[in-house]
Length: 162
Image 1: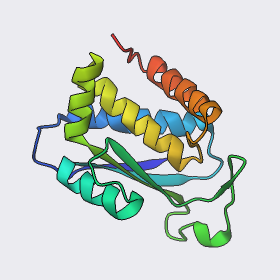
Image 2: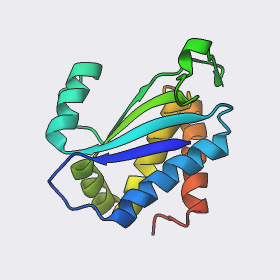
Image 3: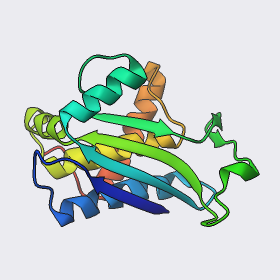
């Protein structure tokens, strides 16, 4: 999987190690789920103002949020519905979509939940990646499944809530 992480905010310094952890968490999630095609995605770190605007524009919710996902692949019962036009002829990859993470919200939530900022960034990257891979949390059962998958990836990275 080709994953690009962009830091498009100036609110907080983000170390190279943290950027690599975000990438590692998202890639591990994709690998664990076994997406059957070569693929690519992007993660962009932004401030609250940017994610607020995107949340308003795309979801009609007038407040900042922690993570937004913009999937490009259609799924039927978690099976990707890929057509030849979905595969980039230059890279031979399917674009899964984009994940946007608010650095400010991640910082607030890490402090509120009492765990590290790295864990929160990894959690949000995995959460966003699961959305790109066809998961959602519209029902209690879907939420339970997604939560279990998120925790499994974070545990394998050694990122606990402590």
